[in-house]
Length: 251
Ligand SMILES: [Zn+2]
Image (cartoon, rainbow, N blue to C red; front, side):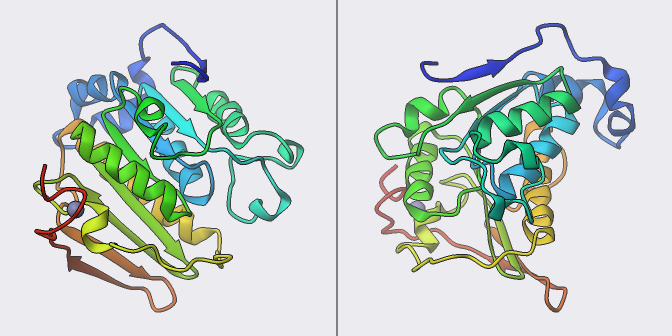
């Protein structure tokens, strides 16, 4: 893809690395091979994106495409653990790629340092079979949602605010799309964040992705997991399609 940079290792996966997950019930070599043939698009290399890409890298997802237009800033370092102090000022995608490649050199990591918009999103997402929304702005999220609906691919949505995290698995028409239950962007300013919250929320997004890619377990289709870390009360709320949704109703 034009503009994408990648670090690639063409030899097949060494299954010894994944032995402790291959022995999971219902997993086996077959699920692992499915992961190694998978391509996942991760929007955002911030707090959520660091946790998502780390866990997908550890698990052996074959190809990750990471998109973020920001550079590393000192204010990121309380939560965005893939970026080191010496990476301040560098592209976040390149900083994340360097750390992830050092952890698992078998993974192909493509980077796109662009802001996601309605007009470039289809090309940037490319042939990925799953989108993971780790953004902190609704313009980008709505563009991603539109792209997921157009391409008919699922999207794992995640968001945090302070000590609260939320995730859901979107794949219309079996589930709502993002616009069904978030028709209007909330008024966002500087979001308060404690690092462990995006770290936990992003890890759960990664679990949703891994279950979907391997065909194991049950994903959060039609359900929103709302986690209040200040009380440790987790709720599992039903989310429904809007029959008049401007994005997904007519598709
Ligand atoms: Zn919708």
